[in-house]
Amino acid sequence: MTSSIETLPPELFRFILAYLSPEDTSALAQTCHRMNIITRDDKIWQQYFLQRYIFSTNSIQYSDEEYLPSSALKFTEPPDNCTWQEYFIQRSLQDKHIRSLLNEIISIRIKRIHNAELISSTYGFLAFDVLRHYFSPSIDTSKQLNTSITLNLRNLTREYYSLDIARLISRNIGLSLLNDLKNRTETRTEGKALINALFIIQCFHPYGIFLSLNRLHLIGERLINDPIFSTLNVNEKCESIIKTMKIEKFLAANGGDEYYDLENSFLFSTFNGKPTIPLTLVAIFCALADECGLIAQPIGFPGEVMIQVEQSLNNSIPLIISIFDGKIITLNEINVRLADVLDRPLTYPLFITPIIELVIRSARNIINSISRYTTSSLNSYGLYAAVSILKILGDGALPFAFHSMINVIKEHFPMDIRFLEMLSSPLTTLNDDLDQIRNQDLNPLPIEEKRRINSSPKFYAGQIFQHKQYNYWGVICGWDLICMASTLWQVRMGITNLLRGASQPFYHILANDSSRRYVAEDNINTDAFNLIDDQQEKYSIVQNLCSIDDIGKYFERVDVINARFIPNNELRNEYPDDFV
Image (tube, rainbow, N blue to C red; front, side, top):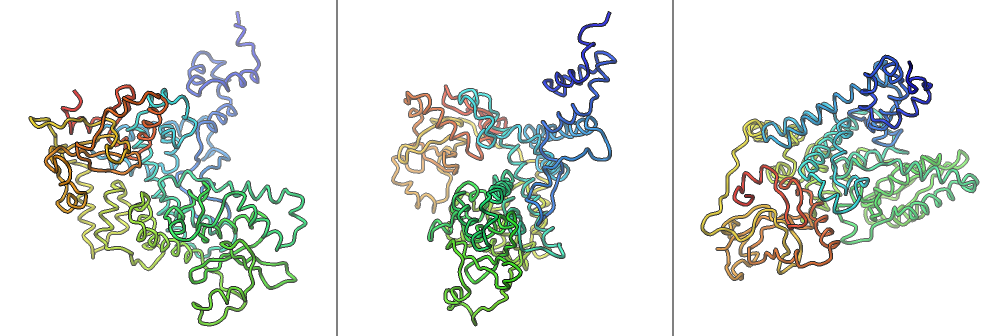
């Protein structure tokens, strides 16, 4: 007797299978011959694949025709004439290997750098389809559910290493794109060329790879679908684009601190509404002009970047746009503005600035910002981007003292072997440093235990506290029995003015502004958190602490009720008496 389920038509089965997971469908295939045949339907496996995977390739190349990283997000057909089911199985096996390497990185100190580089070099973008499932709710907004449930379920150590590896992949892709741009025999200057070149710099931003430039395509579509737009002349179309940019919050930064903010050199901030520098606005205008069928190209002047837009065939004089002023200007106005820096007045045709020259110019902007504001949390990322650009696209001359620069890179980017290899030369000792890094990766130094003895610190690693003087919130991630900072630091911080001076325990802490600090026991208040009656306020404080970049480097999860973070194995081994 045939069961009723077996009499269902294949089309209905396809509808039902859409609600199952790929794993459940594979299990169903093993129940009988007919189920095995029905579950081989490749349309079902295509649907499963597109639901699970975003990235189609491990790397991308520089393009002046489509927005980066669009080429890594396209799925057409499975490779090598395999079926969607075979392709799904192939990617599932790769996912299993990536998760295995990630688990080793989290749980074992040996070969941590090697395994991270293996994920980056072997899988690249494809690893993002695994790593993104472990990103924190601040990055993956789909995880922003009930606050208390989210906090209790989060594995901070897995989040930390998943994001750290994703950033490594992003930076390595940035290096590849710079080499690709350098090796191109011909690079257009109009359209998407400049915005894609700035996207390369974006790869070095901590959240850079999560930016999509396709928003510009959607803005362009709205412009050209407006029936009035097609009736406009070139001048009016340019004015419409400028007006649209202002509506979309692509705005010029004011002078002073706002103008030289390092954030301005990264597209991520611009696409999130922060006013920016002319070079970025020029790139956005050129891309939107291309969407609207106009040819717009960047023109670099001393201290300024403008745009040249080609007119119709019967008008050979192009338009010049000062995007910073938000208007079309004449050549005479430019000559008056730049009279003090020009050797002679400009005449048509104007020189179109090559894309590589503008990228190098952006690197110099970054260096200028770092030099002005030495405490920005983005400085290490900006340094990495600027050095990469100048080393690959420039003349090789680097902006800072080599050893101090390398120390910053090694401190903030310990897994970036490829970058350090690029900087090494027979004239430096970097090859010795690389050998030392590789040896320590294979044979890590033992963790030095810190035991609680007679003069034990009052507080414990993992405790949430409020600073008594400055009122910021933080979490303790280590301690010393007495102040171990230099005499110069103690003088600068006024340690002698404290009741117990330098002879009291000092704590290594992570503050809620993501900074690392060294705090005297006299300034630690662990009771403040428990005195808060509003539970939502407590969760807000903890969420803020959980968003600290390095929190997962030390702690695995958070216990809101007991106002403390639970350490990962490495911190437990370093402070064994703190976690009995």
